Length: 249
Image 1 (cartoon, helix red, strand yellow):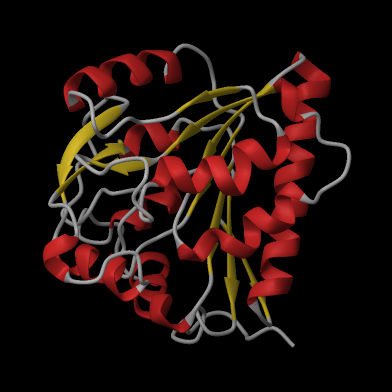
Image 2: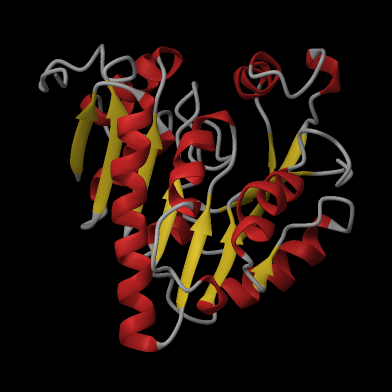
């Protein structure tokens, strides 16, 4: 795993987007198409803005999946990850092949249908973040490191739900759904390349636990350290509690 630290969110996002665009262009050049996994949430705003501005990416040749979605949340809700991706990525660049997790349908059916498409061919690059509780996608601690199912129905723990409220997606904790569809840990690790984007001081404790503590189900994103081609993009704030790296200038 390669950790890169930048002075602020803007420089982090630009560097991560440049790597992501390079990976997508290469996949298209080599195979005629690229298959990607996109993350959502407040931590991805700057990255997606930078990525969608990158030149020379033929988005018509990109097939997109995403990490997770709340169960029971309508597309019209401000916290809907489907709505987020339509606005910030899909419609912005004109992606025509995408597979959104519909949290308003039967969760098991959605997991099976989208999971089958996801597992049908290799993923070239996955964009992920990590949660304040160390979660990877919506795999809260203690995460399931064993299942081979591409998508799971998961229960969201209180720390995860409080993060969603704290980011402004929901007015109260009671408004945050209790369950979600999430890509499994093993499925994420099957991506040929992983780009992990983690800005902000509120993520510093999780960053230290996941990248300097034990690889553990209780720090789900720690499993990224086992991937041969994972690059983690931090800013000085999110890297503040790391002991083995120096802040960026």
